[in-house]
Length: 64
Image (cartoon, rainbow, N blue to C red; front, side, top):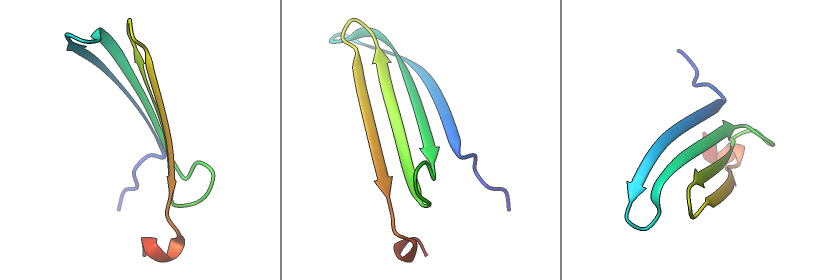
């Protein structure tokens, strides 16, 4: 069984009439602070920049 990497980095280009063209960068890390957790940061670089951060964790009992 192969395990997924702990860190993902994703890049994308996006266009719509509200934000025009934007570059989206996403970094997701598993087991960042505690086991069975996930932290992510997403940034949109454009005329209207945006930043979103999220952290979630599940207990070991609910993960089994």
